[in-house]
Image 1 (cartoon, rainbow, N blue to C red):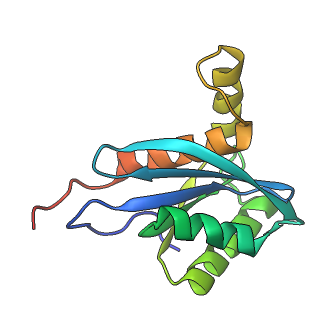
Image 2: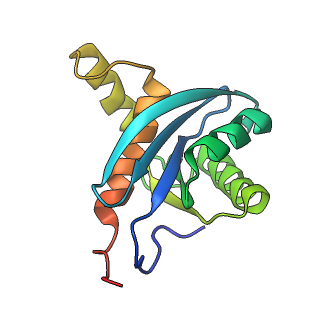
Length: 147
């Protein structure tokens, strides 16, 4: 699972995930505008989602790729949750046959909670964090290359 694709010659639609062992936040966005919206919270049992519900979201939103937030420790070391998030991303890619990219997601839940407290957003922290993850990933994409 790499951080960014080398290039996209067309806009890309993406589902992003804020991985957790009990809940997985989901957001959808597209690279043309670099915007994303919080969608849903998928329940998980020890980090394993309800694959039927996840596949239903994929069928509904038809993404070209996936992005999974990677929860690095603040000292840049890998956390146990990061290892599990990577594994989740690999399973997404293997089961659903779409590329999956990882991105550092440190502090996204903290920022999402702040948005909720300030009344800037509504919804659940996990799906808002997924939205922030996806917006950060879009910000790091290279410019679109005209076809």
